[in-house]
Length: 327
Image (cartoon, rainbow, N blue to C red; front, top):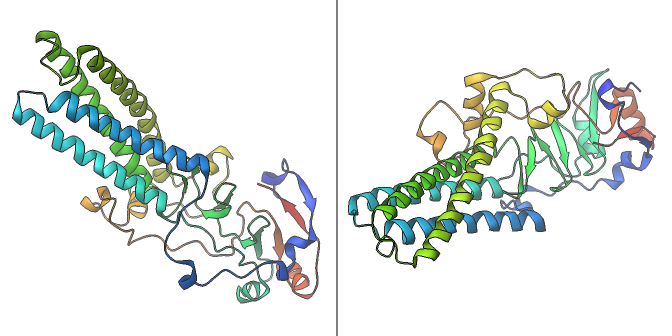
């Protein structure tokens, strides 16, 4: 069997049991699976909880330390409304990114019946993941945290406790954008508040004591600066990945594209679900105009096990040993 250059640096071992169709349990029906997607990972859950707590802390300082004590009612209302709107959109985007199926391949679909249904032509190859017993579509990669193969997987993000993939990349982009915006807004308000307190009596510019006010503002300033830099970089890399139609994993592996690229503005429309509109910025809108998923059989995607048509016929008749490549 031919192994592409991409696979030469990986460990290779023969494990014929990976190709036994009896060991692959067919995926459950849609009705039994439900609609909730949630990854039970302790580190990811902790990071997601910390994310929400940091946003609530920022909202606490902005409202109770800076805006409520302000004597300028219009300033307080405008900035309070703007900050809380952006914070709400950020948390809503985080919620959608965390609880949206990123594009998981049905687990255990490498069954005899499914492989027969592919109706492969002579010379075609099919890719099988030995870890989740799935037939891998083109551009799918296995996530060790989600324990699933994910279509167009960019990376696994512990801050959203989920993979960033084909179905939830929009929500992740919106999350990074809104976090960057509220971080910038908070920094600007902290700067103005410090100037206001220096000009006035410190005991009158906040409901808290001067030392407490200073500590709360410095912590918010540090948090906002850190997350502004981090989320701005993430936002930029995600937009670049969409516009170049190349995921983070594909870029790290220096993988040559074997798919028809949808770059630039067309890529943005595919990722955000249609032509440019306010719906692009709405974390509650669904992706109505997604590109149909790649076919289950691909000609040159990175794989864990490769079977030609002849090998599949042998596989259907008996157990055969093939080279299993670990991602």
